[in-house]
Length: 238
Image 1 (cartoon, rainbow, N blue to C red):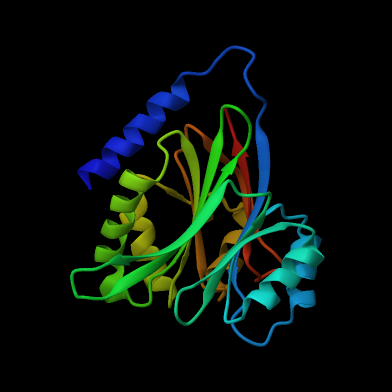
Image 2: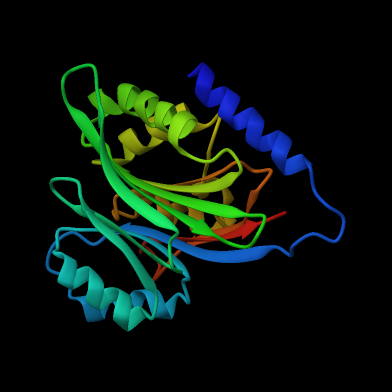
């Protein structure tokens, strides 16, 4: 946890060193959702296009051909998929600099799978996307500790980070949000006031986080289609 805090401080300090006349903000219309089984790639791609999303963190019980077809129809580049057991994770965005899927060990002998991809925005800015499945509330505290250790050692300190966590239920999601709050902000915190009730009822499984706020700002968020996945407008600053 101490190393994770040091990582956060380093990013905040770097975020304060803004050059006059530096790069302009970049908007990422971001969606994170688990489509489960049965959804066709055309249906999922239609969701993405209708939201005009340009950053998608996606979980599905599907093979690489399925993910590839979603990316093709959505006209976005594919990172992954990386298998996490019950689902696979993939990102649809620009061309990644590199990506990996790894398992982080937990004290009980189990582990959590993380899919991680790094994107170069310009000569000065980087964006790191991560997706992880936390299958039970009992594992949430140790899983978040392992994830923060990974961030402290394997994620570039100058990167902005967008994180999607696949959770089994709303209570686990809320617990994880509280554990991450010193480092990451929950995208639900920037929901439009009239969208909060719908978001609480949504059953799409993935919780979306971002940080640090010195680099990423949430303009607003809303559930798509009334009770669909959350779409957040994330602004990458200097």
